[in-house]
Length: 281
Length: 166
Image (cartoon, rainbow over all chains, first blue to last red; front, top):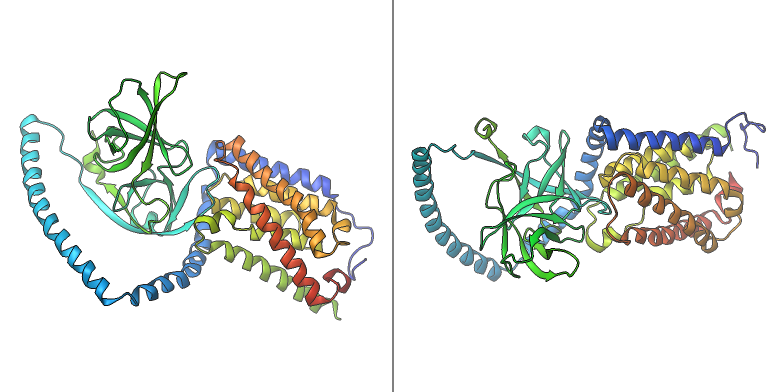
């Protein structure tokens, strides 16, 4: 089976030695990346190469979706327009009330000499890619450092909190979803105002941790961000309580919640960027 | 056949198929399709390790493993180590694997692919946090099926297999 041009007695390392060498390199990669986070340059390089490829591979699917939308029936569009007009009228009323409240709130805050709330900017982003979610649930967005994104910013969609920007590349960024295991979100129960800590459990659900057994909480309660972390603005809907159970062994309730944002179907999201000069305490 | 043109041709084929594998993984997979998605890059690397061990082996596997790590947002080295171990297993069993017909070859590949995936799981567990369920073993099955289809295709295309021609 000697190929032309191949030495019959090649002087090269045997496979076992080569395996060991590469395993050593790999292990040091794991250590450097997990402990010191020193390989972010390599990540940026990969993202620069792969981002156009992802955008291109996505195009046929986007075009198919557009074409599918083109052939929507006229009747359906009319119905949708009517619904949107009604909604708009209702929202306009709400906006007027909200403006009035903002003005009043600002006055009251000046009177009380409280810090004014930080201003906010919004960046639109679209889902670019979704990887396997074996250890952490992440999605990749098509906006990155160029659009002013940085680590730690909250990401929302129309119905609630999606997650938090965890890595930023020049033209794309990674978002850790709220349902990702170990991802903590400070929340409060909308009905009672009690604060708590919601953690993702990796199965597209969240757990509300450390709720004492006598807490007033029931299925259907909404959880909002509490804003005490100075990371998420207060009042973004996060999840709805789906099950409350009491365990014999633990002094805390087991509270299971379903995230409100469409974590596995949303396509367009917003990244909230707080104005840095106002957030300084 | 001239050695130089043969070499260039096979390099082109190797790079072409590996690029195709990487591009296939960039498609917007989601839902059950994502959970069942075969590891195209791993299958490509192991295939070329089996048929062209002088060209594609540890180095390429390590690099493409780093790429896979980037894709999943995993810690660097997680897939790289696993891919390298897979290449070693294929090299170790190479002469044996080459004797089988596509179906048996795919059946022999299943334990290798499973080992690779278990290594990914183990390293992720040690370096990051425990995995969420055993859904990560599903791609092993689909990769095995993919291997069977590729081996069948190659057998039909070349008559008896690439090794005899090379």
